Length: 391
Ligand code: SF4
Ligand code: SF4
Image (cartoon, protein in one colour):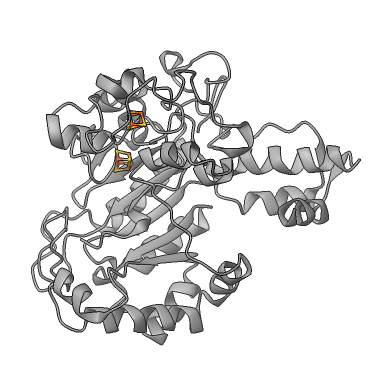
């Protein structure tokens, strides 16, 4: 399995009120009160489309099989497309990470990606990069894949190749990244360059690093998160190649099979999701003042103790040692908030907003409207959005 950054959920919150934006009712037992009432809207899905892979990584969580092996048990193309329809009934605009194994080994990858993109999903691919050449990169762009994640374990080829179990894997990953830059995602590379030099570290699945950043005085934009920290099961889930739905790729507790139940039923009624949404945490994570922005990694807790609500053993924090007062995320750094409009937005501005993945939309609205109010505007246009982003 290609363990890329894309396997991690984008940092993200949820939805409040009577139903999702597409009108589907949220069962009342999932509602909460107050500012923390960011509800359990699905925003992001990692989908392991296949176990097959052309590399043999030491860290693979899927125990990937070789490319020659049969795609035994994998959801068929028809089942995948039906699942996309079912996901769209929970959230029509989710962030979808198509990964594997190596997803490019599935002949129907582009068909699945295109179907999802045409439905309004933001589609990205988690790949080891070695199968991407100029033609594949163009195909990816043509089928509206908006991003790709390629892991590099080292600036030198040999540690990467050793870890990935195949010599030439590093060169292949670099070639793949170059092809994407040339043929498909050059704009993304430019946008990243515009953010200035340096490497942006995002410790998504080491949520306690947000606590470390806070304690070191980093600005809130560096510890941006979903309300509650780790979104596994609250705003994020994973689908296995065989159609099991779990809270995240590293937490092997299934809510059930898509071959037996509809996606919405699993998302809203799966027992494991209910447990994680209860927010009850045990040990240090249960008493910690950083619960709202961290919460600990549920998968690590499960791996070490068999209890997915237990404390995250990799965190050294002693609750209370930072003053004991609960640290809350500023609203403008909280992902997954409901899209609530206080100002009028032009049709063009709304159209532009539609291009923002649903997990970031509520946050973007708040940031833009605050800028508009501070600069004396009562109507939000694309120009105001641009200026707010520049600030
Ligand atoms: S449970 Fe751990 S690995 Fe899974 S999404 Fe949360 S922080 Fe990441
Ligand atoms: S004790 Fe748990 S909630 Fe607190 S910072 Fe550590 S991992 Fe996060």
